[in-house]
Length: 265
Image 1: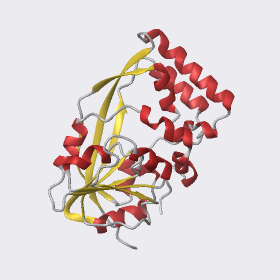
Image 2 (image 1 turned 90 degrees about the vertical axis):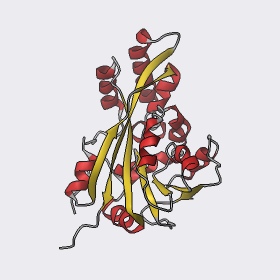
Image 3 (image 1 turned 30 degrees about the vertical axis):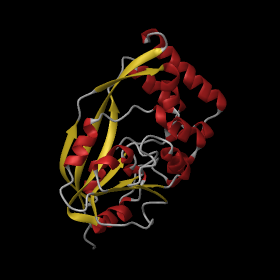
Image 4 (image 1 turned 180 degrees about the horizontal axis):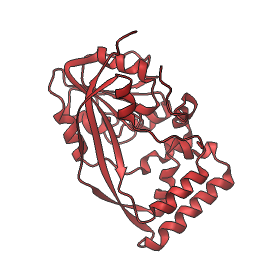
């Protein structure tokens, strides 16, 4: 079995149960609405049921549920699910929240679409992709979705701050799709990047958004480091702000294909 990048451990994934991460998750930039049009367009089979894995607070699930027959949203963090239920469409009657690890939680197939937003890298790929293969419809697709921030003018300084204060100093850059393909777990069918969408966000919320990342969870940072990181980000963005607010652009990135079961031997 090929090793995963060193920082992709179960312990680091569990940080999404930290209260500081859950409380600040809403400060991440929203997915462009075009993202959900693309995802809906991938559904060609019946029933029009979606499995959203690593759902978090339901940023994908809550935006799909009014356009399909059912969404099963799975996450290991009960705190994320509790928060998601309080957000728009979080209590929709066709949205079923499921607490547990996708590797073993009970599922209710078949699913015409499986989605994963900024979460697939944390999972046990050799377990979940054969499972996805078993629960997906004949023409169903699995879509891996990211929201990519267009690099702001302060990107270089920000990268230096993150490298300095990240609690995952063993971070290894990697290409998720490449990792899945070389393990013969995923066959890519297509990809799409949305047009950029501009959001206006306060400096306070921008700084807070970084602590929704597992690598910058406040529960795992020394208070002095957290304060220094926040001050460093503020120093970078304040000269380019307007009355305490900044503008950021976000692009939705979707790669879709079929889950595979690798041959044994």
